[in-house]
Structures are given as structure tokens and as C-alpha cells.
Length: 169
Image (cartoon, rainbow, N blue to C red; front, side):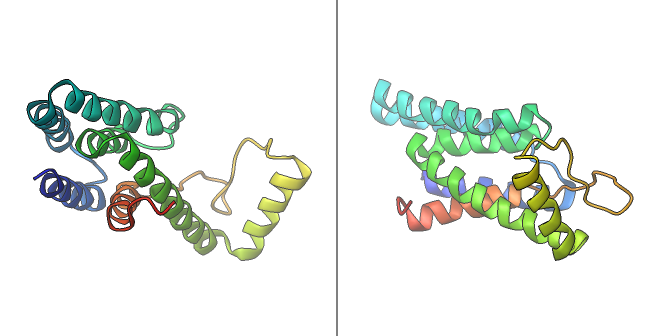
């Protein structure tokens, strides 16, 4: 039952994030409440702890990038909903897969926008000359910081990989 709810939540959030660049509260909040109520009725306080700890862990994993403007609040709530539905261990696996997929998507976008020579030069200067202390990464010749993509795609993909592959981290 929980897996079906998770699948619908992921599918709906994927569609809305791609088309509207939003992950809606009307999807994530009921999913969180469903997870908390379902596991509490099934297993009592242990079930509540399972769901609540997954919720908190999922929330914390993306809270820091959100605070620095790296993603939207909907992404954070989606990861918290995944935690409430599947627990803390699962949400950690989903987070690792999400980070890898998100990094790959970002690298592909950077390579397409800047070109491999400019990306390689910037990475060399950032990591070896300034030891990671540069403040900005320009993604266009005009120097504008217009680099973003719907991170819900990475979250959904990472969650599905975590479900398919389980604990193979």
C-alpha cells in the first residue's frame, strides 16, 4: 500500500516539477500525513518512530541546500515525504542516488552551456589554484548565474533506483 502511494506521489511530483517547476504541498503534505498515520496504526509507537524519523531525516538532508538557495521548498518536502513513507534508511539511499543523478544532470548542463574546455579550466582553477574558495561559477559568457533544472527529476529517479536496487550502496 505504501509503495503505491509513493509511486503516485513520485509520478505526480515529476510531472508538476517538469511542467510547472513546482512540487505541490497538496501532494507532499498528505503523503507525509499518510505515512505517519499508516505506520502508527500498523505498528504503534514503533511505526510512528519509523515514519517520523524518516520524515525528519529526509527534511534535514535537503534543508541546508534549500537554505543556501540551491533548491526549492517543494524538493525538501518531497524528500521528507519519501522518508515518512519509507523510513530513514531508505531515504538515505534515495538521497545518495539523487545526489549522483543530480550531479550528472548538472555536469551535462554545464558542459552543454559552457563547453568542456571552459568547465575543465574552471574546475582546475577552483580546486587546485584556489582550493575551492571561489565564490561564483559563471554559466554563460555574459556572467549570468542562470543555471537551474527541476531537481524533482533527480529526486524521483534517485528514489526509484533506491527502491529497485535497495541497499547496494
